[in-house]
Amino acid sequence: MNRIVLILLLLVGMYNAYGQMQQAVDNIQKEYNLMGLSVAAVCDGRLAGTWHAGLRDYERSLPVNDSTMYRIASISKLVLTTAMMKLREEKLLSLDEDVSNYLGFTLRNPHHPDKPVTVSMLLLHTSSINEGSGYDTFLTDTYNNVSDPPSFSELLVPGGRYYTDDMWREEAPGTYYTYCNANFGLAGTVIEKITGQRFEDYMQETLFKPLGITGSYIPEGVRNINNLAVIYRAEEGKWIPQTDDYRGVMSSPRDFSGYITGTNAAVFSPQGGLRISAAELARIMILHLKKGKYEGKRVISARSIKLMHTPRWYNDGTNGDVEGGIKDSRAPGVHILPQAGPGEILPEGVTMMGHSGAAYGLISLFYFNPEGRYGFIFMTNGVFNGPQKKNSSPFYSCEDAIVKALRENHYLP
Image 1 (cartoon, rainbow, N blue to C red):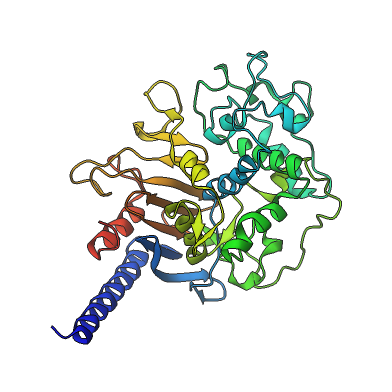
Image 2: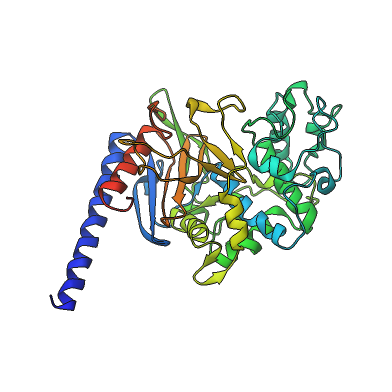
């Protein structure tokens, strides 16, 4: 067959698959009553396509597009960990070091005062820190006073202003998994203590600028606030904005000028505040699939990426709070799903890893297979009836539909 004809046939096939995937995304947005959504597929370590449907701003009828940024919730933790690995490479950080040696105050579980809490334990959610009843007030006061936030010692050290008896679990650090956002507020603070930089500045310099990412952990850092997707929940049959409802204008930006680096990096929401588009988030995935390189340039070492892909906590059914009984595992900043069996939504016998997110009505997925160098990203800024889940799947039903469409159109095996 003539080579030109063959190339044309391949291009037509790719165009048809792309169009069919767009139609599937449109149908899923309507069927599951999603406000808006973005999907990205990475194949052979490259961005294979992005698809969008619905609205990023309901009141102004603004559609989702390639520039739309979402507050991606807990996927932010994986991104933080990726950048934090740079400090390990520079021998400024050890994952097995007592975090007290970085924070400047002694962090101990009062039930186990002789057991150090390590950096690795923060990143694995095995630190034994619990989101106790004092955490919400601490976080509210942090966000409302970013120039002079309370120290984490006030939350986690007995006698502190926000300390409550339920801030620590009975189990010893390193022995039990409990998902806790405070772990990553602390991890961000460790970064600040080591570098002397504000967390947001460190992320920009270490990861975002080298990858050409325009996202930010704070809305004040987003260059075009009009691109932010408003996050919604439905209440009494109506869409109600929950966060990022700026209507194109950052009318009251917070003043970070008085913030003292290393006090409380939760002011920058390292645990869940990253605003980023699907296409730019795919660059983080490509970095992982290419073992720390992006467009041929080394950003993170291959060894650091391998550490992030290697489990250090395994669910045995008794050593953690795990929803749905999924026999998963954890690596630093990374969730590793159990291999799928016959007939399940993910490719059979393949290890998928990454992270999910859920906050304010948004749900998001970021999962990839390092060996096959493929993966997918999904994010929606609202599910009208709330996300529904089948017991047999690790994902919500609307997410299952996206994965099924990606497989049917050969963006996943």
